[in-house]
Length: 152
Length: 353
Length: 102
Image 1: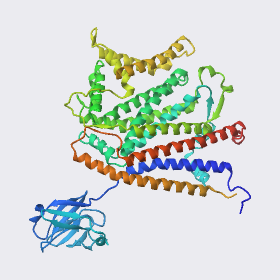
Image 2 (image 1 turned 135 degrees about the vertical axis):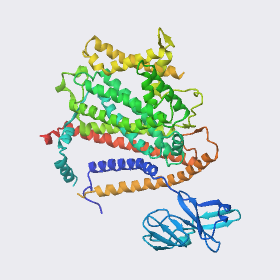
Image 3 (image 1 turned 45 degrees about the vertical axis):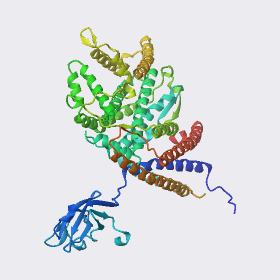
Image 4 (image 1 turned 90 degrees about the horizontal axis):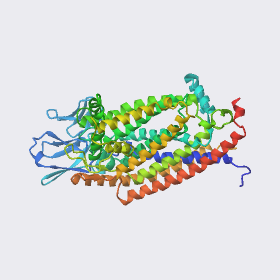
């Protein structure tokens, strides 16, 4: 169906193209600014530590390591198995500590408690501590990001 | 809708006076109108400097240990950091080049005549602030070249009698160029100079608005017959064309000729070969070099520095010196502008040979 | 007459999205490269000099793409701005605005 009159005047069209293109040009200048100001943070895919540092840990104790720029905790359980957590409280990002006598992880910021498996049991934390995959390979302790099934 | 918001604000801010003034402001049209574009072009590059400077300061670490490494990180690790640094570095040169063009156009058209003497003086101070911005910024990457250039540059005031040693110590934060110098230059570059510049700029721009655009000597007295165009939107649209082209040139050069970074400065190493300051100081550098070590009972350097200081003071008071622009003295002053440009060009090229 | 400002805003926004997507693809590719460059930088002894620009082909292509897009944009914008200048000058000559000022 042919329209009898123009939808817009020539002036409106030209003004629109000018403004639109100027906006697109400025946006293409703003984009690198935004990328610069928000640099991507990437967690490490894996961290390899010498097993000798952790072999002599007493059972029911915890040792810290660097998981990127976050706190990582390696816990030796009473049955001599090892487990790794990201030692950051799921409430508001404070670092947690392990209290061996009570067998609980404790966050001092807002009184958050996790049990010995990192499951949140009391206080504001909404979810358990992130557990990382831990593999012992001869002389090395390899800690990897949890696999996708485990995350769910 | 837009008008409702604007009038709501106007009822409280009372800025209708400013907007009315801007809509009524006119710009004269004559053969020297093209130089009117230089002022806003300087402002454009200054804004670019502020924006890129805001971004660089997010990652730059102004300590002796981390300065060079943080710049290296910006260039390699931060996304597109090298472009931001390149734009900042080139825009500085563009801005100072335009400051020189602006200054020369005012000098040659004698726009500093009464009643615009204060505009000239605030402009002269703005130029000194811009040069000092360049000087302090140059040290911040803390590589061999910038360290040596700063050593030389901060040693020059020492040649001034009486206050010389004190001036050098003020700049360096001690006897030598150290980490304290770096921190001091950083604070001057990002805090002290911006405050001075904004105050001076406010005075300068206020004066220009209050006194209107100046007319060249020939056109004076024919105010009514002068052709003019409204500032908004006619002149502003023309300025936008100039800005777009300048930004295009800046980005083209910044994308394909980004500055590199040398390894961190070694305080104990001998000065590297080919040490030189930024291009806008080359002619001063060469002037110092041509003076012999001793003249009568003063060092050549002292004489050179005093001459330069004298020239700067004369330059600052130029409108008062050139108070009869149409006369002989006026013609000599105009000639001196061309002499100065020739001198600066010859000296700069000579220093590179 | 139908007001078409929202139409142009949508077009402008879609263009912006297109640029943002292209830029993002370019930037994430570039991020992997810069991380690679950083690792090399950390591994070898401090290099004598760090060159200003990325050296790999993907990023250098990206630079050329941006350069061409920028100049095309500037030419288009200057063209339209000159049309606007002619329009406004003509209106000024016709004293179109001075009637309002009184």
